[in-house]
Length: 238
Image (cartoon, rainbow, N blue to C red; front, side, top):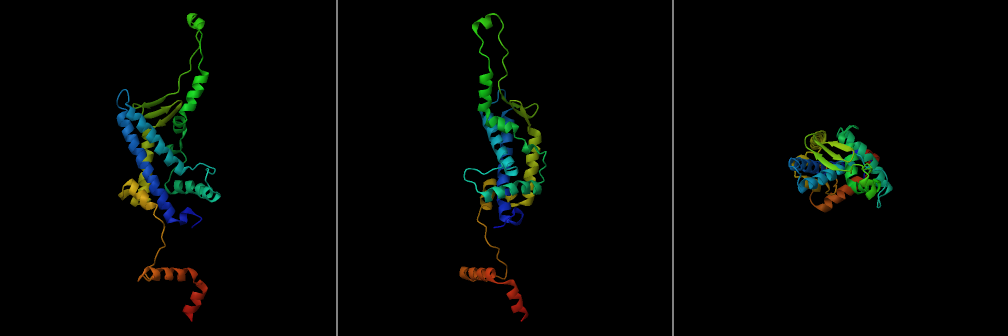
């Protein structure tokens, strides 16, 4: 196994095809979300697409900007590889630091919406009957909201906004770049490409390798791996 992703074509293929899959699904969910949101009020299906879009968008973002630290079953080697993976993919896919894919405020706000409700509930005044009758009731803070604004093309979660047009353009650009680097991601269905990408890596067999039977190939591979390059050179010259 290589210590560098740039020297490991199989690892690159796995990352790129899975990234293409999640990017396509994010775009599909966004397209459906915009279509449903044209209705007033938005039907329940719009909110399903809302959550699906943010979920796949999160997968894309985490692939490009991995979270630091080991998970429950993580290893030091896995953490080291993950910290290399993000910069490598961002470089070959030309993802800028200003990319909207990096913005996580709306996604985090939606994922932890229950916590926002907690804060709103505990801060909400409980006026007494006397206060209501005396018209001295306190000011009530606005509740946290999740909104789809079709006119402005934005998603809003509490105080955070996400520009859907800008995001769609960046996702489409990313998908095109992935397909340039990994053509199989373009010609195969998303799940099929991802499945093929995870097929086990196999040794590259040169054209001059013996191919009469599997045993002959394995013997040839063993011989190639055990041959001392300097010894091989001396035998040739002799």
